[in-house]
Image (cartoon, rainbow, N blue to C red; front, side):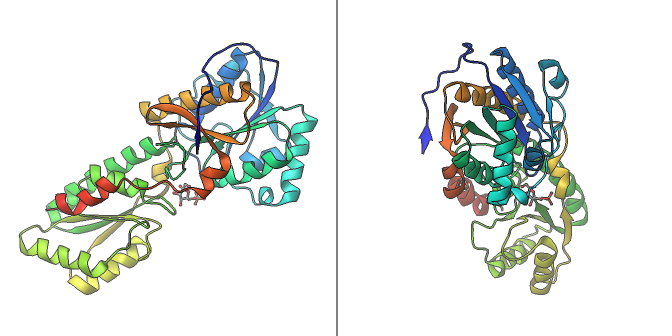
Length: 336
Ligand code: F6P
């Protein structure tokens, strides 16, 4: 459920100390979000403590105070200056109790966690035992978080992958070859659907839609018969038929073609954030501070239909964001 109604303002409220961290897989635009949180909080006269290496640093009490100038010249860089990690310890009640104790011992009255659904599951549990505010900011290249049309990092990642696909198309066309391009998105096909559409892929294989590989191979053979000798298949890494190499073997066995495979991998996670990601990160960072000022907790900020909204952290994990059904229907129509 979306919750709205928090006014954007910079009215001074009681002095607060805000904890800030980035967690899970990094995403371009995380630095822009850090900068925005720090400066919006400091504009209210608050203090910000940046915890290093995500929830791991929170448990260990590893933090640094972030003044406005400490976040200068970072918004144009990929990665995260606070570092990030995936914390096993935070999955346990004992780990979360340690984190709560660190927050209380340092007088931190609000925590902003920048990350994806795994991070939000963890900090939602923290919100049960911590008296301060807990606010999430969605940042993952996978775009698989309910409660925001896009997550920070998605736009940069799809543009990076698209650049690669355009290059592959050149060589695929010259050699009249079939290419399988594997893109990230552990359990979701948002990246695959976006870059497959923008890159004119003949087939887009995503975990959300059952793949009929026999039919797919028939279409490749038929296209070849019509004189279309090159094809690009974009494969999401979470595809049920297997990874791109496994699928290439199956395609080879069923068609006799000799496909080539390119796995884009972590290249998609790095690089300068696009303007769109920087703007989204800037809005969501400042809005997270507004939400804290309004006394809210256990929510994620997001942008839906152009509006800044909040969604219960619990809902970000239990409700599923769906792929654009219109785009899904278009793929076979456009691949001629
Ligand atoms: O969650 C973002 C993501 O990039 C996924 O798309 C991918 O499956 C995963 O992280 C890779 O994680 P790691 O960097 O830990 O291998």
